[in-house]
Structure formats: structure tokens, C-alpha cells
Image 1 (cartoon, one colour):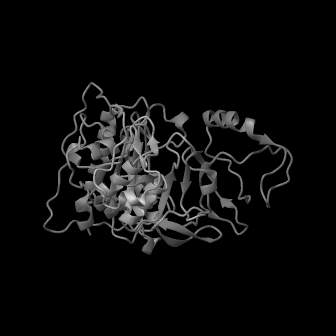
Image 2: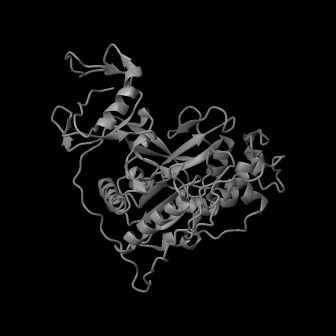
Image 3: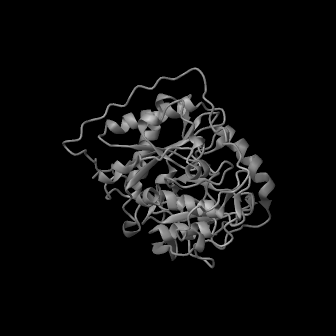
Length: 416
């Protein structure tokens, strides 16, 4: 750890009380920094276990933060992933126009029903794991095929491989060629799991790699290219696939902007729908197309494809402006507060996925949750109160309980 300064603004009395409660149990006697820590009296040092979001103007000549302001604690980011950011001027991303022959779309009105639909009911438990009906080579590539990865649902390694094989044409269209962050659960989702971005000592078969410049060094990051890589993921127990919003060949030119609607347990599904459609309306006003998918949980992602060209700072500023507009219009429903304690039962509109190195769950990726749900692209017409996001599962796809689906995001590749 290297000392990079102190933060004295951005706190409220509520925030201070919350921080004191979290920091006091972590207090230690000496500074945890390798170098640069001040030696003033009255400083209370803590174990470096919490991660905070801090905005700042620039870096000083001494490598310290200039005009920092506390934004909140990050519950979603491990401390090991924190790296130094580079300051850059914010410029609005260049508008991407529709082709002349593409008619403008008017979003359908959203009615807010009084009742809350049943969201997230798990599918009935399957007593026996699925078998491999036809050996197309997948079975030969999987060792311990009967190992159960989702104990409550009986989904095995072979089931996971079969699912990846079934959705490969669609999943690869949206995830191939992008740096990855993978969640591996070799012994099943209830056992030890870990995140993997680099090849490491237990590389996943048939995955490519790309060199990425990080804070102080250059590291290899994993990249998916083809079906063989997906089968390799199943073999190594990868139950979640997360991607960067950029291709490996152009790491500084993001081509996706993501709005993540993360509902509170008290939030209504109708409010998630309202927020997603309102963001779509705001984007339509800028002549930008957007696409929607379930996350494999109770929320949705609204994704905007862009031409490579805007910088990471551009897409971060752009997404923050859209999110700010929505929270100003409906502050009782939506918030951009990072700290869960400050959300007050509102839906968290997360735009932090639009930063260099940040990831979001790939379309068609499974999730590490009971029920074996998957993140499913849907059409805007499908986003309605009767939709049950958790009905999209590995099991429903393999057992044919859900009819074959056309990729709702197929048109994304035709947008320029």
C-alpha cells in the first residue's frame, strides 16, 4: 500500500457515524502503508479492509490526491482491485446516429400496477442431474461430469457444459474478444469460490489472453474466443462470466455503456421497469439505441452500444449524467448512493461498470445462485410486470421448458 493523501470533505453526520462504527473494530497501532505515511499525532490507523469511492480533481506533483471528496463505501469491489486512476478531461461522447432508413421508435407507455408480481420464485427442484443425451464431444472434454455444482437444483458440470454449448452462438456474439472476470466454484456454488482475471497457476483451457497495462505493471488478462473456451470454463467450474465494455484489441476505446438497476429487497419490480424505460427514453432523445437484459437476479441492465472512440472518462461522465437525471426526477425511487445504508429502500442505479477495468455480467452468463439463473437478453416488449427474471435458468434451457429464443440483442451488431 502507498499513501495517497487524506479526504476531508463529502461527509455527513450520518456518514461519519456509519464510518466510525465500521472503522473502530479495525483500529491498529501502526500505519499499514509501505511508505509515505504522515507521522502526526492523533491519527488512528486501521486494517485496510474497506474500500471507499473518492472523487478528486487531479494528482499533485507529490502523487497525492488534489481536492478529494468522499463518495461512499464500495461493497462490490475487493481491495485488491483498487488501482491508481489517471485524470482526464471530460468530453461528451460523440452522438451515434441511426441509419437514415431506420424509423424512430417511440417507447411504449409504462403503467404501474398496484400489485407486485411474484419475482424470483425458484423453479422446482430436480431430483436427478441431467444426462448427456448425445455425445457431441462435450462429454469427452469434461472430467467428473456428474459433479454437482448447484446442489439445490442438481445441475452438474456436464449440464453447465451443455448449457454453454447451447447458447454459444449468442453468448460469443456479445462476450468473445473482451477481457474477462470469471467466478469459479470448482466444488459447487456452496463451496469455496474465487474470482479470476489472469491465467494464474490454474489456467483455463482454450482461453486467449491480452496484455493490459495496470497501475505499476503489465498483466495478462483472460479473453474468450470460441466454444472450446466455453467448454474449458465448464471444466474449471466457471459459473459466472463478466466482461469489460471494450474489445481486447482497443482497450482504451469502450463500445458499451451500462446502466445497472440494482433493486433493494423492498423495491417494486414495477419501479425497475419504470426506471429502465425512462433511461431508454432519455437515450432515445439523444438518438441512441439501447438494449435490456435480466441480470440473473432481481435487476436489469440497460446497455448502449457505441462506436469505439469515446474515452473511459467520456462514458463514465455520460452515464453519470443520465443517472443523475433519473434520480432528480424520481428521488423517492432511485439513488446513486454507493453505501447500502443510505439507499433507504430505493433502487441503486449503478454506473460504475463504465470505468476502465470494471466488468458487468455477460449476456447468457449463469449466476452463482440457487435456481441456476442466467442473465438473459430480452426485448423491450418483454419487459413487463408479468415477467419473472429468475425464470431464465440453466435447467429450463436444457429441459426445453422454455421455447427456443431468438437473440433479442441480435440487432446490436448492426448498429454503427
